[in-house]
Image (cartoon, rainbow, N blue to C red; front, side):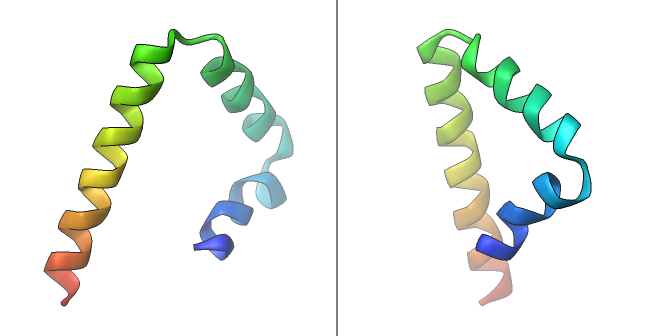
Length: 50
C-alpha cells in the first residue's frame, strides 16, 4: 500500500500538492463519501483477487 501511496508524490510532486489542496478545500461530507467509496472499491478488488 505504501508503494502505491508514494508513487504520485515521487512521479509528480506538483500534481500531488494540487490534489491535496483540492481535497483540503472540499466539504467534510464530500471527503467522507469519497473515503467510503474508496474503501468499498478496495473491498471489491480484494474479493475479486481472492
